[in-house]
Image: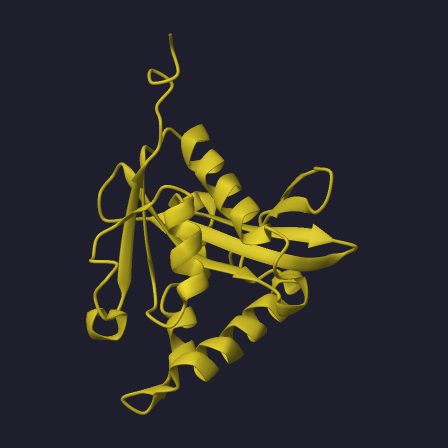
Length: 179
């Protein structure tokens, strides 16, 4: 059995906790995300949409497999989360499971999660990030566009006909920051 990895990064508030999707602190976040997936997307070929959350083993989101999983923690409770795993390309990670608890939305927490995921990828010298979101998540599309992710689809098209909405972003390298 894989042990839960934990590394806490104190910040003003909330704190950043690098951990695992199996951490008990993450359970309420995953449960709420599952409910919302099922409410927004219903059944896919008779299967609840939340089954997508169990598509990848937890290990994929831990450093041992090149991934990461983080929680934003406030007053001992997770308020937002996000993860990445290695993508098919060796220089790319795929962001997954970015989520803000419904009681804590409209505070910029998803943006904070994304900024920290990008920082972790940069610390690991990973220059490229990909991610997908669903067509019924316009708030996620707006966030990713605002953060400089390039849509790999026509933003003016009918999103339902596209299905998964893919985004890409190249992170600045340390060479890009030199004068």
